[in-house]
Amino acid sequence: MTDKTLFEPYDLGPIRLANRIVMAPLTRNRAGTGLMPGEYAATYYGQRASAGLIITEATQISADAQGYQDTPGLYTQQQIEGWRKVTDAVHARGGRIFVQLWHVGRISHVDLRPGGTAPVAPSAIRAAAKTFVNNGFHDVSEPRALALDEIPGIVEDFRRAAANAMAVGFDGVEVHGANGYLLEQFIKDGANTRTDAYGGSIENRARLLLEVTAAVAKETGAERTGVRLSPVSSAGAISCSDPQPQYDYIAEQLSALGVVYLHVVEGATGGPRDSAPFDFDSLRSRFKNTYLANNGYDLELANARLSEGKADLFAFGRPFISNPDLVERLETGAPLNALDPATLYGGGAKGYIDYPALANSNA
Picture 1 (tube, rainbow, N blue to C red):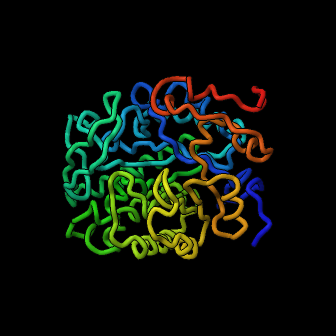
Picture 2: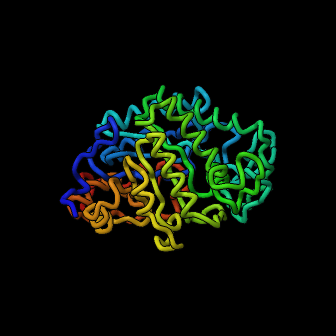
Picture 3: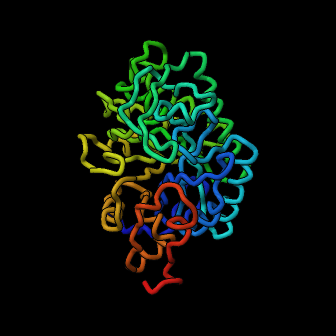
């Protein structure tokens, strides 16, 4: 047992965080022209700068990586300039911010793809999933398997996006290896039936994640690189026959790379924490740096897990959408604003930057 609190500062590698509360990555589908951060993005993130760390919405590493309508990228000059406004806004209020980089793989639709081409994946297995495109939810398209000689290009796209992130002032980068997207599609054998160096064994299926992470860490520094994993989540209609040994191995390898944190979705993404048998403490014991716990955390659960030494940082998701000053509300016991589900995805200022802070409300 420890006497640590969620509201004390925490040293994430070389970065001093004001507290142990992290704003989880939250897709909002509000990117502007050219898939740059939208008109109100700097205000939105700046309002939430009291979080110990903000992790941005998932951000495309290339045009090839997009899977949802109106999600931002970090590969064109216009996008780079848009993100600079965001980092400036957060830093002006004393906050810290990492960008989450993703490639969606098979969770995409031809209408979002360059030239209307098929999405790419480790294997040509279509997910029983939907994506948000053409202002509605539609079945994802049939993917094609990546050729072996295309894979280095994926690694390079992650590296280049990481370089762009550091150039615009992000404090670090999170590699999105979770929630049924490309890197997890390689990890989990329900989506990966390859027989080459990227398929079959536990080591081979982890290869792309580890290559991407190493490339990003070389660009940003391992002390400014985090990785998100979701060992038992079925998001994106994905499955794994051997999650415990698979993810124990990944945790050990990421620890050896020296990345600063492991961001773990404990259970089903946005669903039950006990959705499938898995020993998350095993990952904690195998990873030497910061363990960031995610999924269904509230103040009581986070405090309990912290006191038990089970995690170092705790991610809060939707509560940050409707409570820009969530840290203050949790610390003082103030009531939380209710979330408006109708404004979660897409739209403008409503449901994005207009939720009141305590200083501007009667809460």
